[in-house]
Length: 486
Image 1 (cartoon, rainbow, N blue to C red):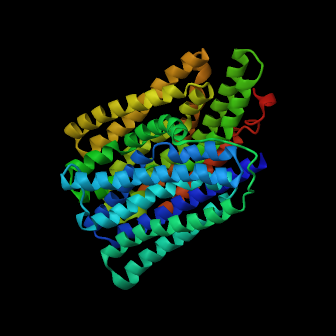
Image 2: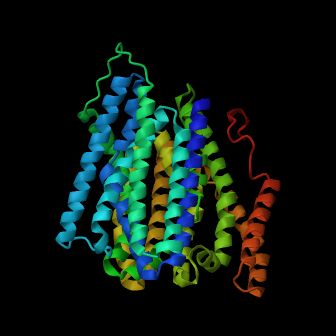
């Protein structure tokens, strides 16, 4: 259990460090690149992440399942090599497919002069998805943190070389491509050394073939694939229908507040083992449902005391936040950013975690497919009537529709009422208190122009909100203690 907690902590820290470095990178590049070059850079990264998500399926996740079954060197290497070779084959397929489609003009992009660096970037980006699972199984999560820090420093060094020495845009493109290659070989060196330390014990015989890996990976990958496409639908519309400059503006605004996903994901992940434990107990179904839903509601209340004040902060300071992140050049991104943050209230509860706990994972796949269908329709209609703002509105609308659908599914699975399931009274109370706290800060913000005094106001507003919610006991200490559930 201590190893699980330690590994989870290292992974959260590694992802947090990676997100922070990515944010700093974007902040710097948005200031030093002209809008056309910056748009090409964002499109370069966008296509890389999108295609990587499409081709890897669930192969990286299969490593956590199959590699954990053995600590014998030959078998570990055999399984790992099959997964890595599968990813290599998929990466080559993606490279060849992208190259062919671009020659046939089926794919539109604005970095044609950097096609071959992009193909290498894509190849190694896919290969790098392999290493998380074996590092976790081998208890090398600390090394993940070290490599992420090293890669972050290299990334910042590339930007420094661009800013202070060469001032040539190609430095950025060749730099981020080289970083993926360096990342791969750093991972490979530590991975190889770690595997060689495993014992050569031939007494166990675990036979894992390509068919087993594909059978395990495909269902997981299909759900993840549909989910990723859902995330990118609006940006695909912008890529195909609008100039690269508007892609730069839209992609800057179409983001979630930094670290929100890490906060919500960490709390949700910490509760999943508790859900599983409650449902495995020899208790009446009604009592097991009560225990799970009680914890779920309390975690949602805690997360809402963070997200609702942040939402109010965005309502006041959304223009300043965009200028702070990207500079005055991208002030047009502010309205997209504001619309995107309308998703914050619905992010307080993780509906999928409940469905997974009750072994209804197939509903998540179905929901993702339905979500993609509505997302495409909403984006088409939104763009037709409202232009680029309509794409952001369509994305938010899809999120709320899916939340409503999942609530009805949870009600059916748990056989309880909406009042028992959803902490509506608490959410309304937290939202209203956050709104009241916002009012004096809104008045002060109107007195001062948009400048760095806004940072002080943002920090004060958020801290005061947290203190008030703490005093009102919205942070229950017994959230992880079953015997103290009210």
